[in-house]
View 1 (tube, each protein chain N blue to C red):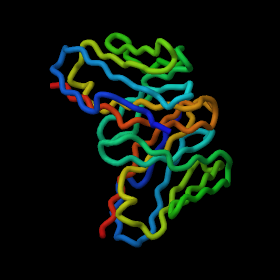
View 2 (tube, chains in turn cyan, purple):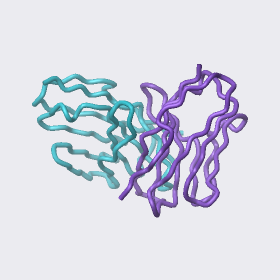
View 3 (spheres, chains in turn green, red):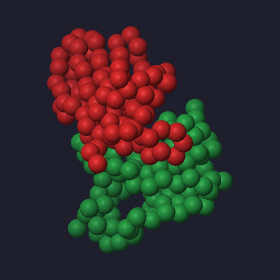
Length: 112
Length: 114
């Protein structure tokens, strides 16, 4: 079965700094999703990447998909306290079925 | 558009007691999911519905867990009897279905079994 591994597991950055979170799959990626979760709440959909080399941005968050490396990265530019939370990557483990498996999450703290 | 609604938000029960969680998906979303999330981990799929049909329940512990989605809209997840290890957050999600349809999650039900 497919597994997703995220790195780092946790991250503390100073406000204004850039950061990158990685998500590596054990198998071929059929679409890669990024979510954000605040403690005690559900997952908020950020972005979906479908093709190798695809890059998407939303405000100060950019995600890229490297299909050959079976990896995706999430980059935050000029981090703010509002970026704090848990970032999770999800992938369709069965190939275009809509069934998502998730990584273990990366906890981000942003110090003012 | 209203999001996925779950209730209750919190539930504390004693072991061996039954418990039920309710989910109302986003209107028009045919696919509904129940996920379990343990502290510090990503969500794990329990069951997936396409309309009223359970199309993937391979990870649902059927000796104590059951789910239903009778009219293809709302869904209920039940545990009977609950065990200490069932303490977790139970998340419901819905999507339009098929490939490349993002899942939209509710806020979850945090279950504590004492």
